[in-house]
Amino acid sequence: MRFLFLSTCPEPWGGSEELWWQAASELAGSGHGVGVLKTRLDASHPRIRALRELGGRVAGLPAGHHVIQAAAVGATLAARRPQLAIVCQGRNLDGAHLALVCALMRVPYVVVSQKATEAEWPADRVRPYLERAFVRARRAVFVSARNQTLTEQQIGAPIERAVVLPNPVLAGLAGPLPWPEPNGLLRLACVGRLFPAEKGQDIILNVLAMERWRGRPLHVSFYGEGVNREGLERLAHNLGLERVSFEGFADDREGIWRRNHALVLPSRAEGLPLTVLEAMRCGRVPVVTDVGGSGEVVDDGATGFVAPSPTVHAFDDALERAWAARGEWPAIGEAAARRIAELVPDERTCPLASLLLAEAT
Image 1 (cartoon, rainbow, N blue to C red):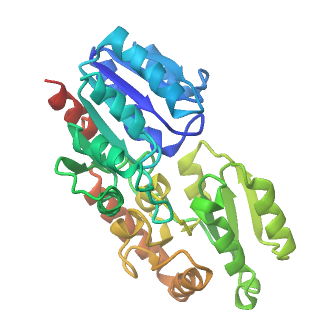
Image 2 (cartoon, rainbow, N blue to C red; image 1 turned 180 degrees about the vertical axis):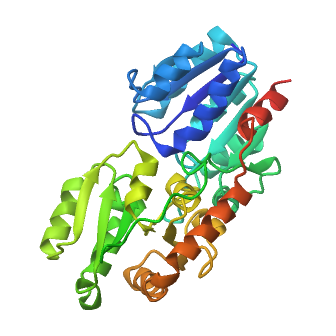
């Protein structure tokens, strides 16, 4: 086994796993030995099935206490002795214990970090271990420059071998989609896990409850599933909101943007959201918070609208500016598509796969 991917994503599958999956699939398809240990493994998931068909070995990583996970990873490292381990974190600090197992067993490793948040800082007793996990890595991959900076502040040290690689774009690759006919109603989509602690769906619901928004011809559709769906539905009901709907998980990403004119994403914590990249590449208008990489790819007023903070007041202001410019949305959407095409160009090879090959030699 040449490459061993260790995924700490807390869900059976999440957007944070698309980057490592793309790299693992390319490596396996090129004949390299690839193994995966993943938490909450769903063997029937299309991504897992596809990787296995390419020859990848996939097994479950026990959920629960770090000691149990570390023991499982240690046993696999001892048995397989990969040339390179890749610790794929759903956040930015949740896989450090696995990185330290790699360091202890002298297995070179790369850390890939997705989401980060200012709301969670490590205690002093664990900060040195987190610092060690990043400093000893062959490479530390981040999906946004802001999250690299935040991580360096949280661990109290610069990460000299850090690199920023964007998440892959999975929709709109043929260019912007045709603009949906409004038919008297603007349609906004909020796409993401129903988990307001990070995705902030409660913020947009409270904005829509304001008097000036109640009478405006717009509809917000929530796409996704999560542990807070019932609570969010209850909140919408208690606020008396009629033009909102919960559509569940939608696998057809382009289908979402064929029906909707804009993205609303009032996140409290992010990496570089796939949904922002995809909405923009499809020619839709993003209204986002300046969290994670969202503010790095959306130029306020030019390719979308950015709220400076994840609060009801700030998001209301950003959405109000978007509403005032609604006649320009088709042109803003086209500018957004050009922006993402420049930032994340189509490539024959996955940048992460290329980096891993270089580090494994």
